Amino acid sequence: MKLLTKKSENYSQWYNDLVIKAEMADNSAVRGCMVIKPYGYAIWEKMQAALDKMFKDTGHENAYFPLFIPKSFFSKEASHVEGFAKECAVVTHYRLKNDPNGKGIIVDPEAKLEEELIVRPTSETIIWNTYKGWIQSYRDLPILINQWANVVRWEMRTRLFLRTTEFLWQEGHTAHATREEALEETMKMVNVYADFVENWLAIPVIKGVKSACERFAGAIDTYCIEALMQDGKALQCGTSHFLGQNFAKAFDVKFTNKEGALDYVWATSWGVSTRLMGALIMAHADDNGLIIPPKMAPYQVVIVPIYKGSQLQEVVDAGNKIKQMLLEKGIRVKFDDRDNNTPGFKFATYELKGVPLRIAIGPRDIQNNTVELARRDTLEKMTVSQDMLIEKIIELLDEIQSNMYQKALKFREEHTYDIDNYEEFKKLIEEKPGFYRAHWDGTAETETKIKDETKATIRCIPFENKEEPGICMVTGKPSKQRVLFARAY
RNA sequence: CGGGGUGUAGCGUAGUCCGGUUAGCGCGCCACGUUCGGGACGUGGAGGUCGGCAGUUCGAAUCUGCCCACCCCGACCA
Image 1 (cartoon, chains in turn blue, orange):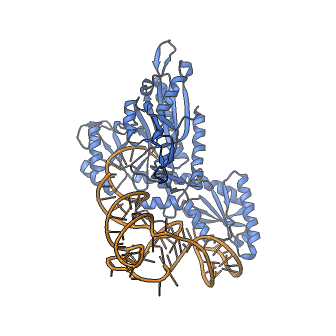
Image 2 (tube, protein in one colour):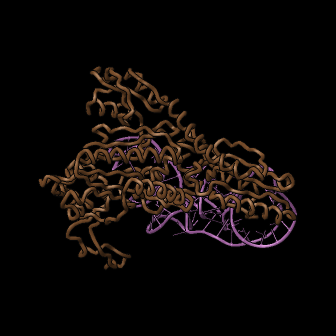
Image 3 (tube, rainbow, N blue to C red):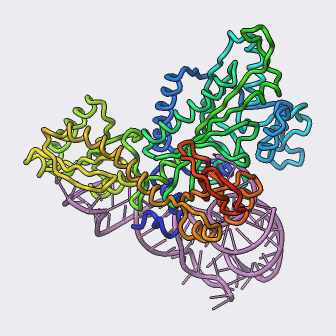
C-alpha cells in the first residue's frame, strides 16, 4: 500500500499526506484552520514544556491577555497597522437571530458593535495598552511576560502547521528602562530560540537580523532564526523584535527614571509558533514517515510483541517487564500489545509516527534473552541482550538526537552556496534550491528587485558573519558582507 | 482575488464524453476462525442525500444553469 507520495514527486503533497497520515493534524471545517490531533498535540506539549522552562529560567513569567482587541488600539502604531491590516478577522456583531424569511439563522443587524473588535493577530497593542497602567517608575521595570495563546491571521494561502489561519504560539512582551537592556533581552531570546531548536528539535539554524523589508511591523530591528528544509526552502523558525520606544510612544507609556526624568519605556517582543511542528516534519521526515528526535517524541520507545497463539502470555509478560524497567528510568515508552494487528503493521505504523526506537520481542528473543532494537533515523536493526538493554537504549536515544542534528546540518551545508553572479543566481535558485550567500548593497530597491525576479528573499544578515568586503551581485555597489538568500515558506 | 483541477461509503477510487436494472472495486470497519520475526488470510456482514439547489427528461452520478467546498500554482505571509 502506498502511504506517501515520494518526496521528489510533489513535496507539498508529500508533506500534507505525512502530516495527516502520521496523525499530526487534519484539515478542519474552517477555512485554513487545522485540527491538531492527539499525537501532534503531544509533540506541541513537549515543545511548550521545554520552552516554558527556558523562559522561566531567564526570568520570565506567564500571563494572559484578551483575544479581542478594540479597533482603535490597532491604529495607534502606524507601521504596525499597515503590516497587519490586510489579514485581520474582525468581530462586528454580537448576536444571531432566526431569519424572518424562515431560512435558518442570520446575524442580527440590530446587534452591531459600536466599535469593532479585532481577533488578535499578535498582542502588542492590547498588552501595551495594559502596561500603560502598570508602569510609573523605573522600579516597576523590567516587565518580563510571556503569553501562551492562539492568534488569527487571515492569510490568502494556508498550509498545515506552516501557515494556518488560527495558530498556537507563545509571545513574550517585555518592558525595560533602557535601550541597552531591551537590546540585550532581544538578543537573549533569539539565543534561547536557537538553543531550543538546535538542541531539542535537532534542526540547525542561522541566527541573524532581518533586512528592513522583512522586519516585523512596528519593530526597529527583528532578529530571527532561519532553518533549511529538505526541499531547499528556508523556514523562519522564530523571531525576536527590538521595538525601541515605538509602542511606548504609541500607547504613551512613560516612567520616571533614576534621575527623576520622564522617559518612554523600551520594548521587545518575541515568539515561536506551531510552525515549529512544520519545521520538525520537513527537516527530518523521510518516505517512511516522520522522524521525531528523542527529546520531542511523545514516546521514545515502542515495544512490539511477536508471538504465536500459545506464546502470548509469555511474550506479553516479557514486554511488560521491559516497559516497567524503561518507565523507571524515565523513558517514555508504549507497549503495543493489541492482538488485532500483525507485527509488520505495527512496525510500519510507528515508523510513520516517527518513534525513535522500536523493540521487538518474540519467542526467539525470550529463548536467547535478547530483543531486536531498531533505530528510526537510520532504520538500522540490531539484536541486544536484555541485560544491556537499558544502557543501550539510553545511549541510542542520545545518539539519535545528535545524529539527527548532524544529518540536518550536513544537508544544510551541502545546500549552502556562495554566489557572486546575479544571472547565475537566477538560474541556480531554480535548479538547486538552498541558502545562497551573496553580497548585497543594503538597499530595499535591490532586495525587492531580487524578490520580484527570483522569489528569493533575504532570510537574514547572519550574526556570525565574517567581514568580507565585496560588491553587490546586482548593482555592483560595495558591500561589507554576504547575506543569506533563499526562497522561503 | 486571478489561473488550473477535483468533489461518488471513514480513506482511495471506477462509472460521467455517449442518460437506462439493485452505483462497482480496493483499503478500513464489525463477527467468527486460522494467523503473527516487515503493512496476514478465509467466510459472513454493516456502511451511499453520487458536494448543494434548480432545470431538461418516461428516466439523471451522467446533460444544462447557478451556488458551495477543497487541492495545486500565483499575489500575501510567521
